[in-house]
Image (cartoon, rainbow over the protein chains, first blue to last red):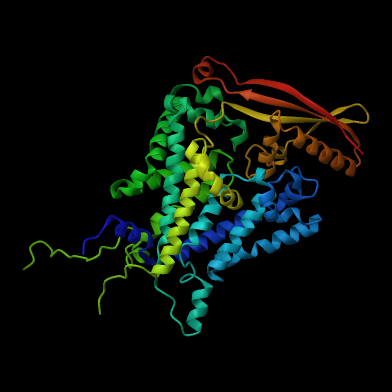
Length: 316
Length: 178
């Protein structure tokens, strides 16, 4: 029977992957969720106390019910609520509760966002996306207490699960880079090559105050490095879906991404964005690991009728 | 026994439900991306609630179409009963010395306040500053704001020795209400 494009798309989205791929992705996402949640702790009072900048009246009426942090009367209750809401993230980390814990972790993130959206950054938004994507697969069939518990009760957890979560993370990452790359194509500083110069000199983003100055970056080799960097970032971002779709360029594209994100992390204060973005690379890296990826066709879609060519020179 | 891997790990009903969910999400994302077009506006009549409740509006243009060519911040001064003006430190000034290790979310919130139309939030900030100083035994009479910005020179001007240019604009002054 001929394989239609729709069949291919369906198999690409839902084809099986090794349960450990999704399990490791879930566990590492859990670690990110816990870290990100706890990082709020020193600022709870400033961001959510009754006298904080944003008041209930400033929130959208249709989402006010999610602003849980605004419902508590004092600082002690705020700490208690925040402590309680880290539990779903911990459950995601250890793999207990299946998709329900992911759903609760998403709700906890939404509560933070709707209680003070001004304090959110791109890393928070991406973390919500990843949580939503991970709902697409059974993430606790391996590397999880759920799986351990099932084995203890004499049941065998599945060795392969739907790869939807992996695919959604790949698509989300490609969309994120490509859309921002296309938006940058319209910017004069990106085309002229000066964007990185300006980005590194924006005082409120600088991790090390005074490290970059106009005199240091505006001349000589430094200027040409920022220009080449600007054009490289532009080409890499706008073309990201192509670079990762083509196997020959995939690993170079991902390696460049790691370099860019580490560079951003070292020089700029943009919250958790770099780390959370790099988490998405697991969706490409883990299925390709010999120890994890070879049991299910995670990168290459399953063919309807697998064919094997005899090795050259072998007798027919 | 066949060694061929299974085509799917989940059944057809789940696949249909998940496909519909993915399609809905893609529709909402697309509507948000094209929100300035007629089609985007029409679509968002249906998708906006989902988008805002889940906070899924996708906007990845921090340095697009151009990175900021100025650093802008809000300067805040408090008037003490003695008549002396003191600087109210910015949130990020709490930090760490020359290398900023911690990301302060309050700094992002604070940066949001410098535009002209954020008067309501500056009033809220005034009340908070007055209360906090009062609690520390430092009575404050009024708080005033100034928007300051440091304009990055063009690379060719920087090469000729131009430094970043500091400018500012006085905003409002609010009394402490007790």
